[in-house]
Image 1 (cartoon, rainbow, N blue to C red):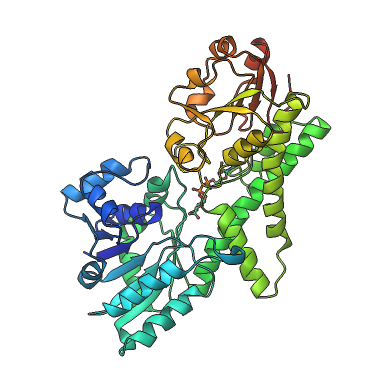
Image 2: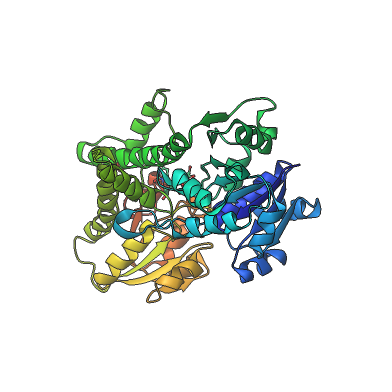
Length: 437
Ligand code: UGA
């Protein structure tokens, strides 16, 4: 049984730790944040993630999972050490490596025996070498560790599922020994199929950025196609469906919307751009994806202003959905933030409702009215804007909503509401790239 320590209990660290325990390894999830560990030990999770709570409980019971704030001791007890701390956006779009390097230092001080040092955090290409050099400079015996880049491809909201049933697992290492041990960590995955890809460290680091940037680019692309659809009278859903039937394109990540958000795409695009600039390589497509995404967020604001024929001051608007996507309480870089700030600056009064992200949004925006109930939030408003594709919003009681509202405007930035029903209830509406009824 592999003994693994995961350092960092954010969403990547926690899901990775729980997933590796589920694969049959013995895992310690370690963090210097004592409160977080105390909470985890008493069953309180720092994030909301589908299926996580039950899987944690099961693995604790089976003695495969534990939590500790003693990072040193956790390292000493383990053979595989996984770095899963944050790499927030730093100066000029560059990823801030300070947490990762600080963990690497702690690891170097506690290499009591041969260990594999694995990076899960999204780090700029070349970071592996930086971490290897840092540890080498601090230990006498260079045979005490091998290094692996093992990037994550977890989507918030379905992160545990993505971990347990991955399309591929990238193991970037120059050491055969480390590769074999890591293969063993992921052993249940290749009993029937083999999703494991062995690469060099730099290639693994590049795969992560290339994948995220490509998906972001794909979203920006379909958003711009949607905008053109509006101008020429075409329907973006039909366009995206037909495009997706071409196996070379695939139908994933072709859903138009209010612009992508989250803790990954916006930050990773900036970081990739910073890496390309440092290496004097032009990446116009990545630059364009960033600009298109900014424009898309603005376009949503213009749409609601247009629905009011420019006269939006002193109006009351309900925003349904604050999270950057459904099934998470994460609001980082959410398009709802731009919408709220823009509407605020136009003198609009805002009611907000999200099934689980109200508290997160209230931490950064406190001059709007938060509601625990959707139908209370729409009471006496002039317009409703749907910002997140929560299932709860797909089956809205439009009749009831219309009755409670004082106006009849609805902007569906996620294209989840049936247009026939909107027309039938007398709504004046808009969405993204559809032919209006
Ligand atoms: C993303 C990647 O999908 C993961 O593979 C990656 O591991 C993760 O970043 C990371 O680097 O940690 P995540 O940010 O959780 O995952 O969420 P996504 O499902 O990718 O959505 C990102 C944004 O794009 C959301 O705002 C979503 O609403 C938007 N989106 C997504 C669209 O507008 N259209 C789509 O078709 C898909």
